[in-house]
Each structure stands twice: as structure tokens, then as C-alpha cells.
Image (cartoon, rainbow, N blue to C red):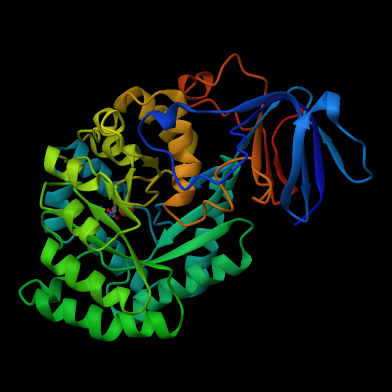
Length: 418
Ligand code: NIG
Ligand code: FE
């Protein structure tokens, strides 16, 4: 947590003067900026900003942005970056014609990751996840949520959550932790699913809570995984321990996952590739953030979520990566923003708000992240001066993030533009 004055900022983006919980509908087009700006960070927090003409000099470290653009870092509210092994054989199987669901039904998919995780040591899991965190920081991510869910037994779920806790304590960026014991039904329980659900509720949740290992509880509420009734049972049990819901819903089918999430006051319902009007209507007027993960639809070759319709009907939308070894082996938020624009017809301002302030809301970090605002963390990335905001999603695949500053500390410096 350092002091830093950034001067000669060509454009300071997403500048807010009061607190926004989240942005919805037409508000998602608002993207306030200041040109020829400075930004002052003290002890890691933003304490001031303004135009260069009004800058009052003060002693302390200075970074000259040389006209570059400064943005609040990405808030990636949905990842599974603790895992033991990649799954590119399933990728090849899909190229050869199998579907994600067929692979899962044959014991592949999440169950494949659970087998690998069971034999990995905590140190291995920690070191590999730490490298993935370093990778996403280099894309400009400054806050992230990480789920368990490749354990699927008391012992292995706790192991994953302990790894996430260690990452929380050591990583440069802020992390929220989610318990996802209900990610899949393990094979031995396939014909006794109620027994696995009993284990989640009576054995896993009490331990997770008493060891203070999670901030949230997730359930994969979808076709072939958990039903809305099972989801509500698990989420109600979690809420007794103070764990709010953040769930997977409506990825593979329209099974009532969104409605189950809303009924449990979920902080977010995530995926939403398979939506109907009832599911969209269920979200209206609620505090539940619809969180879209277009990297998944891209990688699995599925329909994309109806973001355009959702925003046009007044809903908020957040964007996250879903970084995981099965459905989305990428945590590249600039690419997620490009996909949102290209495949879901989100406008650049909407996609940027979805990946910053609304993503922060989906981790309850909106008072700390998501915009340039006094009192929030000074965690930003710098790009060269661009021709317009739209250039960011337009130039898909280009690495425009040249520097990353976490809580006032310059942690990534890729080229010599600053
Ligand atoms: O968000 N959909 C459920 N869970 C993950 C994928 C998990 C996996 O395939 O390993 C997701 O896509
Ligand atoms: Fe996921």
C-alpha cells in the first residue's frame, strides 16, 4: 500500500464522485472521464484527482503517464482458478463431436478435475493458482472471486478453500472466496444424490463456516447437475451461516435456476446463456446481479447470453471470466469485454461498466473497486493514448495494458511508454 502521484494522464476513465451500488439499463452507457488529469494515491487509496492545470505539487513518488489512459482495474467476480490440471483432452473430444454435457455424463468434466485435485498437494495447488493470479493481474484484474468445487468431498473442499485463504493472505489483489461443494454429484452418489446433498448441508457447510473459509455459497443449478429445489435447500442452509448465494444458473438449460437464485436473494446469478422471458422478468427490481461469462459460450460453442435484451429491459449486467480448466481456460478480461461487444452486442461503455463497477458489486466490493473515486483502492491499469474507448474491445487480442498499479504500487510494467 503505497503513495503515488500519476501525472500527465491523457484520459482518466470511469471517474465517479459518489457511490454507485451498480449500474443498470441506460445508466450502463455512462462513462465519465477527465482529460489531462492527475491521480493521487496515498497508502494505497485514491485521495484526489483533477486536471493537470489544477495540480498542486506535493513531495512523494511520481509516475508520468506521458499521455497514457488510466482505468480502474477489472473486477472479475467469477473464477475457478484453483485446479490441479488442464483438460485439453476434453477440448479435443469436443472438436471430435462430443458435447460438454456428454463428457460430464461419462465422468469427465468437473469429476475429472476432482480426481486430479484429490491427489494434488496444497502447495502445488497454491503455487499454480498463484501463477494464474499473476497472469490475470497482468491483464489488469485487481479484484477476483475464486470458487472451490473441484473437491466434492469434505476433505478436498476444505483443502481447496484453505488454498484460496492462503492466496487471500499472500496475493497482491483482493480475493473473495466461494464454497461450491454443490458443483457436481460425485459418481458414488449418482443414485443417492440426497446423501451427497446431506453431506454438503450437514458436514461441509458447518466446517466451512466454523473455519471461516468462505464468503459465499454457490450451487451449479442446471440441467444434469442440481435442481432448483436442491439449490434452495443448500442456499437456505448456507444463509444460516451468513454465507450469501452466488450461483451458476441457466447455462445448459432453462430449469428455474435464476428464479431459485432470486428466491434466495443471491448476490449474483451467473452464466445465463439459456434464458427466457420469465427468467429475465424474475431479475427485475431485485438486487441480484446477472453475471455473464461470454468466454464460456465462446469456448464451448454455445449460444451467448441475451445481454442486449437484458440491458434494454432495464437490468444491470456484470461480466466475468469464469477462468476454469473445463469450460473457459482463460482469465483474460479484455477479451471478455471484446466478446461481450462482438457476440452479445453490448456497447463498449456498457461492457466496461459491466467489467468494473458491476463486477465489484457482484463481490460486494463496490465501495472499494470499480471506479476512480476518492476512498477506493488505487488499483488501476494504464494503456497508451487510444483513439476512443471503443478501441479496447475493437482491438481484440491486442495487449493494450502496459502497466498495472495495485494499491499505489507499480507491479507490472510491460513497455516503455511511461
Ligand atoms: O462455470 N458450469 C459449471 N462450472 C464451470 C465449469 C466447470 C468445469 O467444467 O470444470 C463453469 O463453466
Ligand atoms: Fe463457473
